[in-house]
Amino acid sequence: MTAIRQCRRAHGALGAAQAIAFACGGVLGTALVDSFRWLLGSPTAAFAIVFCVEAVLFLAAAGLAVRARTGSRISSPTSSAVTA
Image 1 (cartoon, helix red, strand yellow):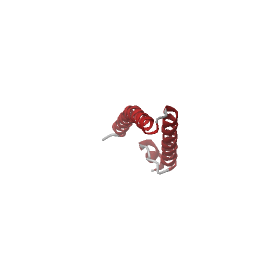
Image 2 (cartoon, one colour; image 1 turned 90 degrees about the horizontal axis):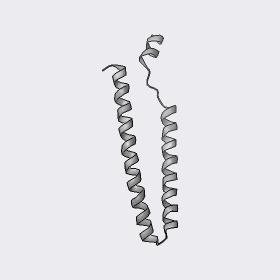
Image 3 (tube, one colour; image 1 turned 45 degrees about the vertical axis):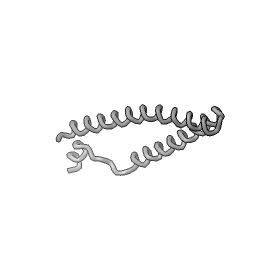
Image 4 (cartoon, one colour; image 1 turned 120 degrees about the vertical axis):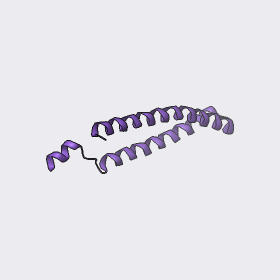
């Protein structure tokens, strides 16, 4: 498989993962707000709890992104050809 084909496949998988996460995020966020509203009886507290959960998840995702960025790098065909 050529490097260009691998990049296209990787970008396609990334796009699919983002679309699935976007759809699931809306559904799960709504379900959590409704559940906490039912349990606590307060829409304000329900939204605050869900917002805090989303903030923690965002920080975890940002940490993973930084870790992936500073981790091992995949060498491109041009960089390996230059060093060889």
